[in-house]
Length: 396
Image (cartoon, rainbow, N blue to C red; front, top):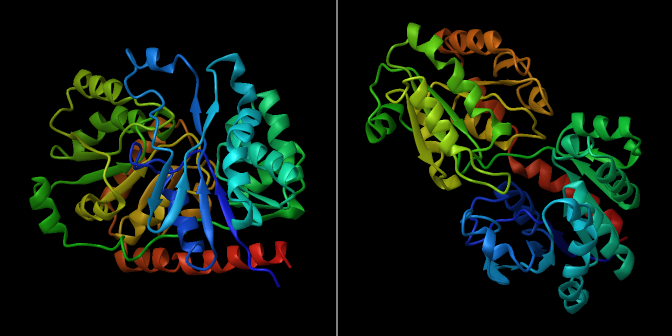
């Protein structure tokens, strides 16, 4: 039996320039890397005049070094031509073309291309797999839902899934979604993300509140995620005036920063000012995963009024710190928050339901230990074993 050797292929991967981009992918695949040899190829979009755009968008497409050594793993960042606007439909092809030289150079170091996101990454990976004659796997992570609304990208996404040797989905809802679109669900296996219980565990609430200057008796909500429209921070801020009527010292902690999807922090600050919530909303910025359990341990309830998710790692991370979760019934959210002892699921866009769920969650006495135990039962070990077994089947 040949040993599986992977190229982990994904355009969203942490670098020194973007340390918080795609951390959930690294968390998953570096654990696989402890069992199997891996190298990472993370294509970076580029076009000749993007430096001009940075004059008014300073954080537009940061360019990492072409190579980094991360935790002993080789990580390459080859550029590929990507012109904003109409030419975005060519991203998959140019991504493959831009990555080809580095894969040829390391051809003897891999026998599987393991890609993440069906398009453009998965599509590019299946082209590379065809050119280099190696099997390709694709992990569906949630972007497949909005991509399905764009005909050209939907076609390429389905072609990629069809050409992949194996497809993983972080949630059953995603598997069913692409099945309705026409994908063969027989080749798709659901393997959710896990939680690192060595990083996420409850700390003393009183101590953490003292560090953040939060009164002991205040009610505290927290959200963690990229500061983008999809995550719904603005929807939570919108309902805070109703909550403050009942809890005058309520505090809402927002943990997160910019991402490749954008950055709406200025808009959120403006919204907070307009609603006169400056004493109630705190922006803590983006934090490394090793620091997240500090603000999580200071809070009472985790909330994410999100428009779309695959499998949100952050729910398990919050639960591992003892927090119940209030979130929307989209993507795989109900699969993570799968019973009412763990939190409350509401319909997306229902403002009154969000208010009621947050009030109920703040009033209720939750069984913290049960929530923590559920999170711990979703540690990474079982997920990694499934993935390693599946990779082995592809090279027998």
